[in-house]
Picture (cartoon, one colour):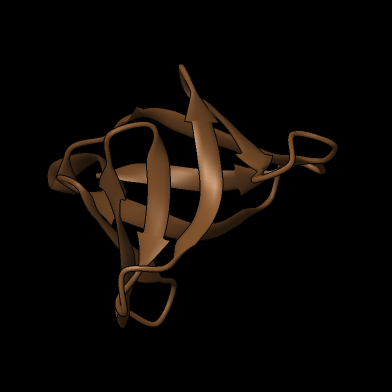
Length: 74
């Protein structure tokens, strides 16, 4: 599991494998190549390493945090 962290340092979603989930555990998208796409297949954000950017690259959304094991969370 890896958290999706905003520019203020707050987690607002997380990844399990390539799937993106809300903090309520609802799937909302996935990583596909250098993009994060929604469940309908529409591009949402662009990935550069662990950094997440708006599609037009003008705004930093945040970053994907380090891998955490489930045992670390409980």
